[in-house]
Length: 366
Image 1 (cartoon, rainbow, N blue to C red):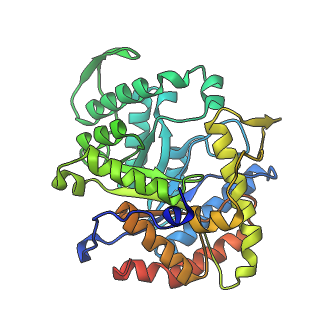
Image 2: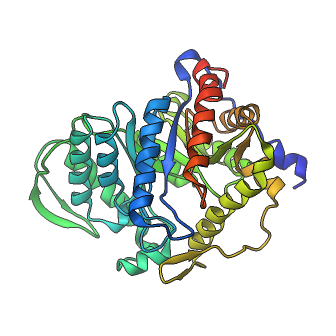
């Protein structure tokens, strides 16, 4: 494939309308390559959520990871409750709860509790997980993750139906059960599910869930392929339109492009660790995630061109518009905090995004 075909992905048939504007959230992984003090890491995240609330972002999303400095955030729904209590209007969510690692009845109770305590501001992201490093330490196998995920989703939906129910499946069996409390949003908070394959996307569409794709290490042309898969997997235009589509990108907004070489390398740390964990090649030493160089890594120029949303406000607007055209997204999840960026850098980038990028998104020009 030549470079022109990489940088000019095929555009989908998705078009914008005034009722179809793209909203914008921000994402919290709580990574710390340098192993910052735990209290400081969580305090930074809370300050970011409060800034996002004041600046007009629509949502803030909490990851789930375990046992390394790749992510200090192991209980996303618990932290979402904390953030809701320290903000006024922004929606809070999980991105994602790794469902196969938990008993689904406990997850159902935690979702309902978080929704009640947040005043109905909860969104729920669910995923199968991808890190063998985490699964092994919790006594699970990654090979079972798809089946466990599907069965767990069935149990969640039964729990949120509001009637006593029992279940007999391959992984979970229990007698008549009811959960307390029930969610404030009925029948349950909006559910977002990570999907890449034709099978996964079709199942998400059939259940009426929203769809999440993208992230570190995913180039723009892969997202174009994803959109083609999405259109094939959900051929009914009405059903396809009912499914919201979200993608995530590392974001840094600046008027000084001389900053970018350093910023790109900070984001490269996340990409290296993410992909090594995905491929089962992770190095974790005394809890410290080690970012090992990967074979055939993209250059800094490629990362800026095909993977990241970074640069001046105009550059970032153009990049988000390209994502919108390629994927038909109606939700953009901006990851402002990656690597060992300082809090000053993160909050400054968020401020500039809110002042110069977010109004363009709100206007419908993207």
